[in-house]
Length: 86
Length: 86
Image 1 (tube, rainbow over the protein chains, first blue to last red):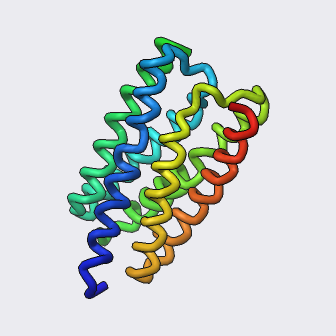
Image 2: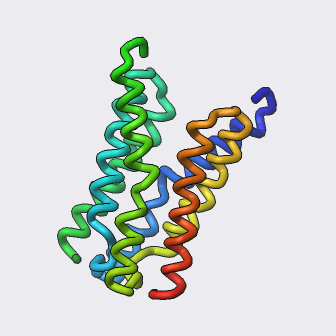
């Protein structure tokens, strides 16, 4: 882990997964359609990232807290869009 | 972090997020429809969890490796179903 390249790879990985639901949000807004999106997936992910945030707070790990808070926010937007356009 | 309850919460969080795409896979197979699913989201997530796996290997962290390998596998199945049913 001494090589800083791994930290860069971790950072890029975090950015990619953290903002991964933005393209889905854009698609639902553009098409005004979300019927094929699984609401069970959205609720399961929301429960999961909420627990990851709790875990991050317990471990005092700001990266885990930040990444999961961002993901949870985008998932809340997506759940709201789902109820609107399903 | 001394309290074992946090490890249990981390474990439940990992299970929830690791298997979060299973409900979406089931839905696509049942409805034979995936048009509303964003392929950009699937590709971005796949790239992200691939880098997380690389990061896990570099950190020699079996939990990061396992969680992201499972997620990557489900994402590959979902991408295959997407190309079939989009």
